Image (cartoon, rainbow, N blue to C red):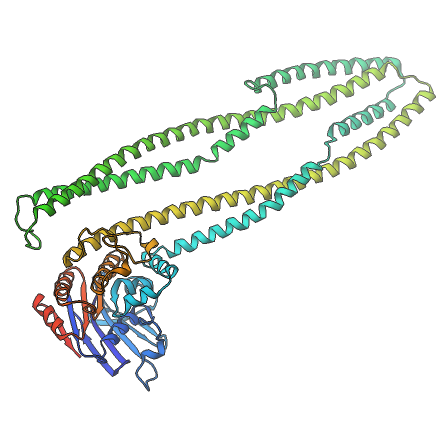
Length: 600
């Protein structure tokens, strides 16, 4: 994104309409105090995100005294197109695009310029005169939050906190469910299904006896038929026993099969996590390989400079000691990455072997599931056959004992009534048992879901933490390299030993093992500018920077170096300098003849 012009109406000290042509890689705006330089920076920031750049001011403070509202317009290029945006302090926004020699209005929410949050715009594109002081008075937590917004990980942090809160709620729900499970298991009702089936069999047998014919020959015929039926059922039962033994091959009893299946399921529960570990190891190997190639290229570039006396880029004399230091540093980094790649390959092979073992375990789980399902069917058939055989035994035994006299039939009727009473009692008990089992199943399901949600939230929170560490770590490395390159331009620090843990230091790193607050005013200003440029390079779309009085706290020598630095920076991105130092403005003219100068 490059700025072409700024249009103000009743904005700050600029009453009515005022236009500023900013269409140049280096724009110098000079003037005394209270001439409106800082107002221009506030106007640019206001157009981009609708916020106030200076702490303590409100939107109403931006308008000219007596005006109903203030309006700022910005003409800029983005994605090879020309746009124009107007924003007023009464929250009206109008976006336009230049097509076919005309301006056309586009929706207010259309992506007319890079979608950055206010903190990214402020840090990436604006350097205020009092900004360093504002940063230092912030609390460490406030500076960390600002860094997270700059790096664009604040949303990930909020998402991580959400899953941690859900995990806490799930953990709180698990406790009462586990207590209810324990109480249900302790007071579980006995399964009276066998007694119920026996009572049904006895009632059916007695009812059959009541309906038996009086003829003895007919009784004997029924006895032979029942005996034949029992023989067929015994043969079927024998086959089922043989099949059950086959299904339990490798197990000592039927209880070991569900236990083995449960153990297999527990071991397979970590399959997805193992696959994720494998993918992460693989991604890390690819990243390290790319880093190795980049380091190898840097070594080659350093080697090409060995026979040259001047740098082909900046035409400065090359110090052999500096080249040797660079080559040694890149060589150490190259060797370190090679060792890391070898280690990560070993981990990748181990992870791949672990995944292969889980595949074999999944096949065994499928086989055990099939055997368990068939075992249930076989077990049910065996129970049914036992009941049928018991009923036939009772019938066969009764067939030879029945008599035709009225006394025997009266006894059978009495036994039938008693058997029916027992059957009614067992049916009621069985209904209560079924309801109890349904309650246990429902509580088990709820506990399982709560535990699963807890584990899922823990896994997601851990994964987000790894993602955050990776994003912040890679960003910190890029920032350190950029800051080190910038500091070399000012010749202020000797070892360029920069503590890059920006989260821990709260955007106030150490240099040469000296804490930030012990540095001189010039050193603080130069280091902070270098950090700003490094952060801007990590912010997509921050293609310009506005510096308000960048020579504050600088001595004469550093003022000269600052002019050279900003002139070189203008080759990379658009630079707008606001200054009340006329000598510094002249120095910028000397450094870059192709610039635009505005005097307020």
